[in-house]
Length: 234
Image (tube, rainbow, N blue to C red; front, side, top):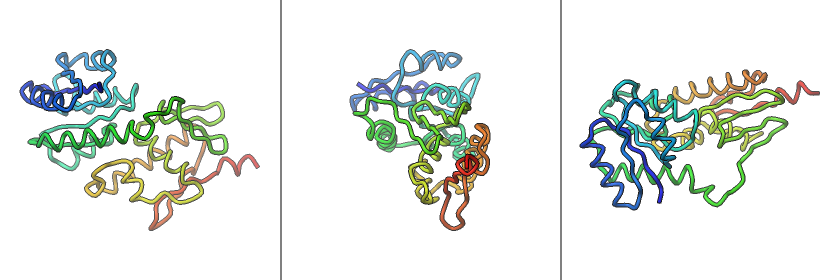
C-alpha cells in the first residue's frame, strides 16, 4: 500500500483530505509535530507529500527544501495563496505541482495519480539505479547528483530533470515546450521565465563541476548541451 503524507496545520482540511485519499487504497499519515516534519518523513518514507505553505515555525517552502535534500518523491503544494509568485516559489523550492484552496478532492486525486505515474510508473520494475553518461559526464537522477571527473554537485529535482532531458536529446535540441511538459503538469500556466531561471541554475551547476558554457540557447527552439569539456580534452 502506497503511503501519502499530509502536512497541513488545519486539522479539518487534513483529516478531510486523508479520509478521501484512503478511499482509493492509500495509507495516509497526517503530520502533527510541525517542528519535526523530517522525522515523520524519514519514519514514514512516503511516496508523495501534500504540503501547505503557511505552517507553524517554518513554512512549506523550507520543508520542501529539506525533503529535496533526501528524496525525489513528488511534493504537491496545497495552499490558499493564489498569487503567481507563490506558485513560482513553490516550484522553485522543489515542488512538483500546486493546488489552490478551496479545491475539489477529485482534482487532488488526479494530481496525485499523475505525480505517482511520473515518479514511479515508468521505472516501477527497474531494480538497478539509473545513470546517464555522456563523454565522462555522469548524472544520477535518483541521487540528484551530477559528476564530472573528481567533482560532484547536488541538484534539485527540476535541475536533474533538465539535465536529463539535455543528455537524452544530445546532440539534438531540447525544445522549450518539451522541457516545460517534463517539469510541470500545467505547463501552459507556468511563466516561461521560470524555465529561464532553472536553466540559469543548471548552468551554474555545470560551472561547479568545472564545465563552462555547457548549455547553449538555440533561439526560437530551446536548449542544447554543448560538449565544451570534450573539446578541451582534444
